[in-house]
Length: 111
Image 1: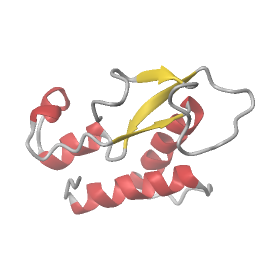
Image 2: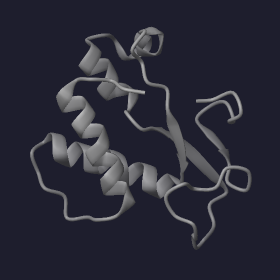
Image 3: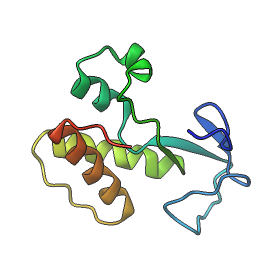
């Protein structure tokens, strides 16, 4: 997360709009910061505990602000793909999930 961004896991949606969907109804009050390469996958790929992954020199801290529904959907799609299932979903959430799974399977954290 860059210094210009909010700190922590969530932020007000009026300051950090969802980067996946321009319009929401109802409008979210908060967004969540999603790691483009989720921390738990980075920990597995790097062979380090989740609690210490952020200290690893190859840790990728890049996040994007997304609404809670999209965040949950991305992680569920990742779970489906890692289990070998083909998700019946399309859209930006699927693209984020594919990106994360591809990085994990290659086990190459990139910035």
